Amino acid sequence: MQTIGIPPLVELKKTQRLEDYPIISKLALAWFGQPECRNTEQDLCWAMDNLFTLPELRVFFAEHPEAAQLPFHKLSPLVLEFGRQLIAHGDVREDLEQQVIQHMQGQMTLLQLDDRRYWRKIVSELRQFRTNGLLLPEGQEV
Image (cartoon, rainbow, N blue to C red; front, side):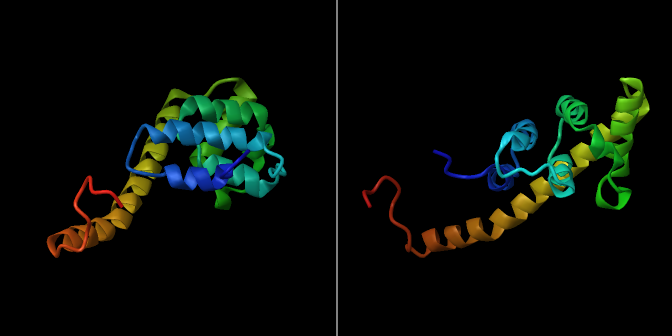
């Protein structure tokens, strides 16, 4: 029995942990095996926005070559060019591959920053609660 769908799980995994991003990439590919996935332009764009590793990006374009024809304004032009080169030539220029890696790393960095911002206020409030004696002592039964 499924308790959470793939898209919400992907959002939950966008944290400061670098180890989560290859998992997110695998989940983005797995989305296409789900009954809720309709293989629409929106599904393809969502998947490309959630791919953070070159191996999964290569698998994605091998399984969904139509994604390389999506409009530039919806996605990273670098990622789309990667897909077009991969489909046309079976491989990608090394300089473009490096640019795509840098793009994916930049996206991960922004998501990590968002996560830190989210938790910063919560952690600060919890510290204040602890200082003011408003939290149960650690290890105490609830």
